[in-house]
Image (tube, rainbow, N blue to C red; front, top):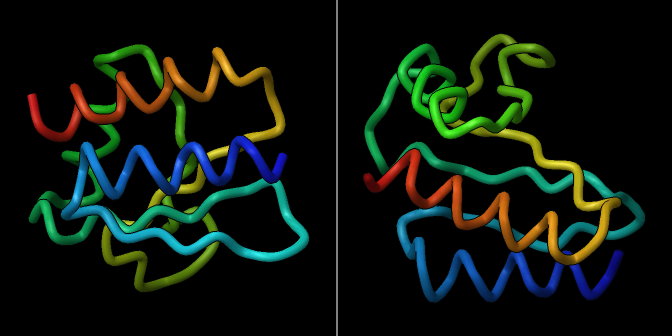
Length: 93
């Protein structure tokens, strides 16, 4: 889990610098702030879905989501790598 979180952190910093992420302690769920891209939550959901991903949007948990998505990193590294590539494609084209 730690290695997957570190990979995600490194990927976002180098490939998606507008995204904000901080490795949290004690969880396999990564909260990623995509608000700097300027999309509404419905737009994010649609774009993410189009690349074959399902990431939970923050509105499923809070009233003021502000562009956050939740990603599960408790999976093989190859899955995390693929999700990162697809997320970048979804958000940046």
